[in-house]
Image (cartoon, rainbow, N blue to C red; front, side):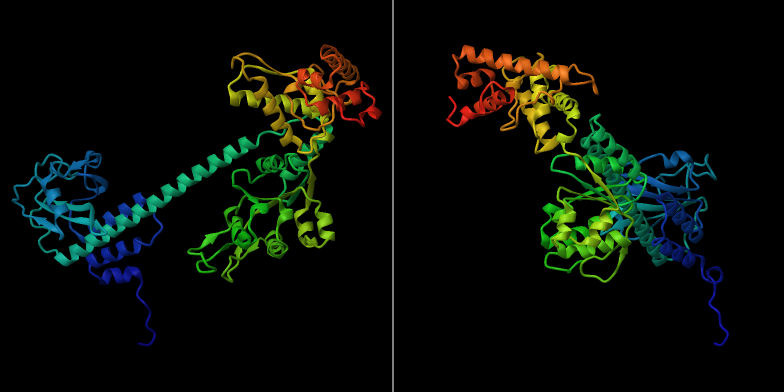
Length: 539
């Protein structure tokens, strides 16, 4: 027909029977984004328009009890009750029937809502009652009931219509239950993720130290954290690059979002692209379902690419696109995803040298190094070693359940003087082992004194007089007088041990609890032995 226009929903509703309109509304609501309470309320509204009832109730079956989810025309007390099917024969009949059930006005079975209708709270009996069981996968999960005060108000209702109404109501309950389950799962996962993030932040710990070198690092962290610039954190193994990354994230505007850690050195080249960018089902053997990559997981937050210097050259072009434009593409699809991710990378390699050698893309290096941040090695911040050692000793005390732990002056001096190729991580391990040795064979609650002999620094050099730090020296105070006292104390200990061992360096080393080669090295540094006489095997 020419010039014909479709009828609006309202016009169609006026022309259709009320029952069909109700069914259409219920069906449409199945795909609508509604909260559970709203979905149930709309469902009952539609049922009331289709069925001339004074009260209606939607109930979920939990064991032998029916629990009201929503109701209309009922007193509030009715919605707070639990109805045991064994005590309410009408409800039991409804749950057992595969078809909708209408009860005769003179049925001897008591109605569960007698005396609970808002329109007639003082009346003893409901005179018209119908109900249908709600099923899910062949299992009864609930019931829908309708009640009226007039005896024959439901007589004209078509049985197939009631069955359709019950099926849609059951589908609505199932849809709502699924949505609620997904929402609960998402909320629970969100809580878990936030808790894991909080614990990871706590585990990363504060950055300890008061040296000028570390102070400059902390200033740069505070500066760059306020921006969204990509950061390249460099430094030797064990200097604390990961703690620096955690601190940047914690001070940034993204701190409430995820910090996703990817160890590029631990990624097999065959799956590295999938790990970072994801894949779709069937993209390769073993790809049974779609999987999001780390960039998508970190959307809105921070992606930490640790050991970025180990990333395969073939993958660097894709990484460049992601860092540069925020565009990623899962393996097996042409679809492009846009993500909002701040990238922080870390490496112990000299990436500029790697670029010169053709092992790292220059354009990617410059993208990642928008803000380069170098973490100094421990030997450049020796003033921090006593603070770090005390912190690690206290941490070991807590782990082992010990009493107070004290590091002796010679032990501190030895720690300050060591070269620490493993940096802070190596210092932590050495101190932890020393506390364990010092606490052996003594009462756990007794004070623990960590002496020079408890340290196992291998071939680490002995403390130089101008490097020694003491436990009683304030931060920033001159070290010369204390260093001289430490040196004199070490010389006296070695001489006394040699006297008691009748000049045997091996015996003196055993008494002092140090390796013989370390004792010889220390003695040479202190001027107690002539290096020229070391060509022969020491006694």
